[in-house]
Picture 1 (cartoon, helix red, strand yellow):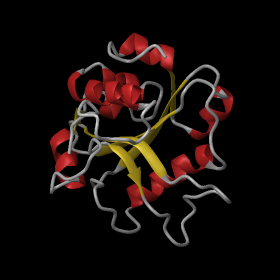
Picture 2 (spheres, rainbow, N blue to C red):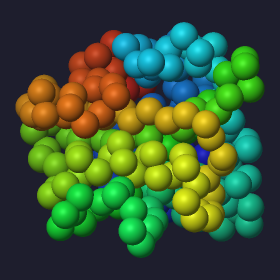
Picture 3 (tube, helix red, strand yellow):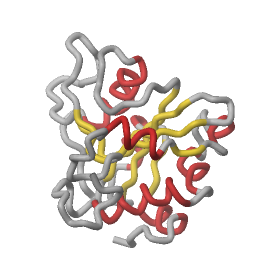
Picture 4 (cartoon, rainbow, N blue to C red):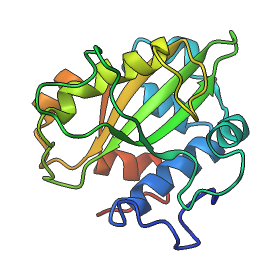
Length: 191
């Protein structure tokens, strides 16, 4: 399994790959990116100095090294029976990227990332389901291959200014525009 999209074998969200890849490598390599992701969330103080669990996540997600897409991308699971992690008639149950961070206290935070291109709309129930799904994953209501155990989570949306930012802010812990991301992450594309 690749660490990024550079080998060209992953067909998942081809237009979003440059953005997601830049985020992932910045989480791995740039100590200023983790506080940037957490800014304004209740977890900033505890996790601003956290370290990414890069290798641990990689080994948990793809121990056979057989995936075509990076280990941090495209987490998709069927909803739990009886869970509230899916809004009525919603169709999407995937997470574009997920990163796990370990705080100096020993606690672990899952960062659920959704990527929207400028003016790209949410599918039915997609925004509303993000936090409940993250809570379901954190509660570990059923085994899910590839998830590290974690005590905390946040949901982060990367999007353009053409996205309904007011609506997004109601359903995500952190909303980052592409312009903000480009200023913080050197390899983040402008468009």
